[in-house]
Amino acid sequence: MSLKKYLFVATISCFFLFALPTNSALAQATANSNPIDLGDTTWMLISTALVLLMTPGLAFFYGGLVRSRNVLNTMMMSLVAMGLIGVTWCLWGYSLAFDVNGIDANHPFGQGIEAFIGGLDWVFLNGVTAAEPDPIGYAPTVPHQLFMAYQMTFAIITPALISGAIVERINFKAYFWFLLLWSTFIYSPLAHWVWGRGWIGASGALDFAGGTVVHISSGVSAVVAAWVIGSRRGFMTQPYAPHNVPFVLLGIGLLWFGWFGFNGGSALASGSLATTAFVNTLIASAAGGLTWLIVEWVYRGKPTAIGIASGFLAGLVGITPGAGFVLPIGAILMGSITAVGCFFAVSLRAKLKFDDSLDTFPIHGVGGTIGALLTGVFATNGLLFGNPGLLWTQFVGVAATYIFAAVGTLIILKFLSLFMKLRVDQETEQQGLDVPQHGEEAYGQDFEFTSLSMNEFSNEPQ
Image (cartoon, rainbow, N blue to C red; front, side):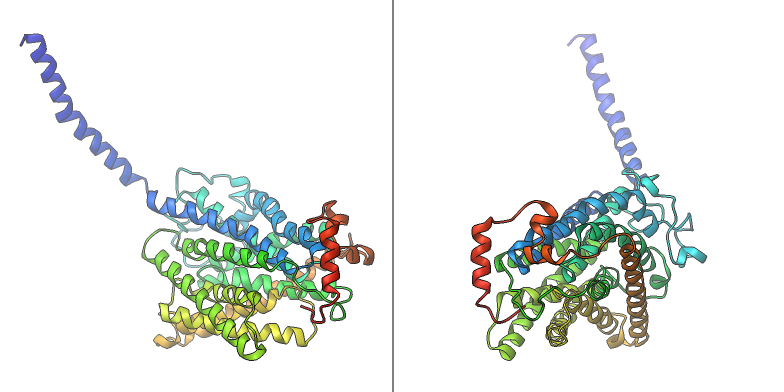
């Protein structure tokens, strides 16, 4: 071998012996300086997509429960939230919910106004990047933009839940503005109170994934909205039978699937906590559906498809506040107890002849309340484990949510009524809202005629 070849081989050997270890060390140093974890980021990307899927799932769930002439309008009330709040959350909602005006990330409680509302540092997503985690420390191993997007999906579905109480009669224009105001002045402050280093979270109250922020707030607001807008014309005197039960079953399937991101993703990282929330979500919903089925079978003689779907949903709602805090047996009990409470709440609502059309409060309001209180019982730092004070703390959080959501919703609706009609006129309501409000119909006139003709023989309103 020539001298030149020896020199070439020696140079290459030196490169592998010295350059590669140096590059490896540099890569390791870079990894150590960047807290973003690929596994956590992957899980949170999936969870964000799962929670977003829940809103179309809700559209199918609610859409199947109304009459065919209103199905598009009902589904649109979920879908419009995806567009409107998807934008406003980026512009100001996220900042109001989670910014704490530069407070120390280790500070346990907001000072002054920070205890009640976030700041404006992150409006228009200023400083919210994909390269680093949030500076407050909410999700220290995933990009800040991803945490923002994940929280956006919660902000989207929460006011969409309210629509179930006011379907088939609310003016879509009024609903549009209601979404804008409610998400800004009710959801963002409440999310800040509980998750954004506000006063409820600082008090020690537990809400893993939205028992108060999502379900109680939407359920209570639904009652107020139904009361202000009024009952459907002909309520309790004409049939309001669900027009498409398979839609309802498709909806609950999508909701249950998405709920694994809703609860499991609230761990904000992959690992044991996400696994705990995932498993508890699975078994609590199963227990809720089974319990509702049995109770309905005993009390009414027949187990129904809508009944088991409602039971699954009740179980999901009930476990949400405690998904990461309870043992599996506790999750089963929470799902089952919540289903029983929601079943009788639905029955009571019918007896009171109150037109919460799709039982938003009996499922989400009552279910969220039971779940939040049971978290104080079954959490591993709760009543059964020697800490009765947690139950009182949970009650305070629930009571504050009731008052804030009820009063805030009433003010928003009364304000809107000064500028526009909250409900459609009698002719539009009788015709159905799809064509007058959107210029579309779901199935065509032949289906509508058949559906109406069949409903004439039904003596049992929903």
